[in-house]
Length: 425
Image 1 (tube, rainbow, N blue to C red):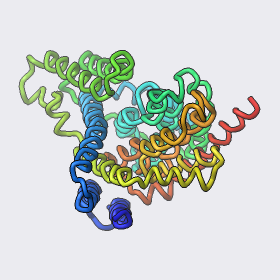
Image 2: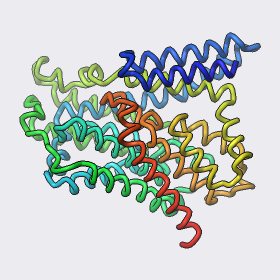
Image 3: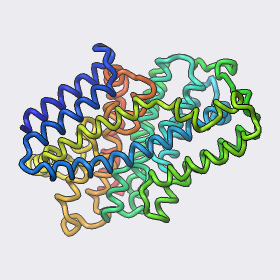
């Protein structure tokens, strides 16, 4: 049964990567793959209630991500409808190629540490859509955004879900993870930025203001108000989580409700046709629902592999066959480009006790780095990559050819810096 399940997953995975060739939306493929995998499991189960309970558990965990994504995308879309990101776009707009590339990388890197890599990526997609004229240049910069957002999330306890898992599990502490992983993460962002800057030849063509389609239904006050309220809400989410210990999606939904009320009050005196595009109702209709369904489908497919024990067995095999904790952590990082890093890290958390590797041990810190940044090597390997693939329709093989090798160089260089820092500094 496990062999058939793996075949189903691999066939579905290949179909997703060949979306452009077979002309079938990857969201449809991901949903079919997820349902077929779980159908196979329950048809071969002795106790179907256990399967249902496990499916419900995974549904709950994945729904948290989906609702978080839904809230974040709606808030970002609402800010964009008011042309709030125009302020940032104008602030970083420059024909100096090197300056623009580094500004994009650094903004993404530090913003993802405060928000998270997924929300930051959604924000940067909106900004780059306002800035960049040439599609291939924009795609290359979005590849850099994926790398920089994952690198920025790895050194922050709230920047990436796996780092948060290690923090909640007691394997790391916030101050120490920042101190130990920041330099490695910075290198894994900086080196790809240098490469991307070299690959882009000549000045970057920017969109003229007229192509930004400014919405003249909103004035400067409304534009700035929604921008600052929206960004403030996004920044409030990790603070809300820290104080209440509620999941991040609860904070995101609270923020969505707040900005919804603000826009209703702000535009209540306007005619319906005038305020329509500025409303949350319109923003919700405009967000890319297929990308959310794709996200749901691929995570549910991976959850089926976790249920039958494939991912924990994979982690155990790496431990027994490799042994060296440096190589184990690097292998987990590279595997996270294909499989979800969450169950892989969860498997290692259960394999290694705090007695064996105490809190803030070298292994946990290296694992936080590799699991957070390794997913950049494939576009489907991280939440940031999946969001870009879904929203911008970037082809899997284009990313594999143009960006994956850049991400791999940054990943390995950062790991080397981490090991050097631990050994000599």
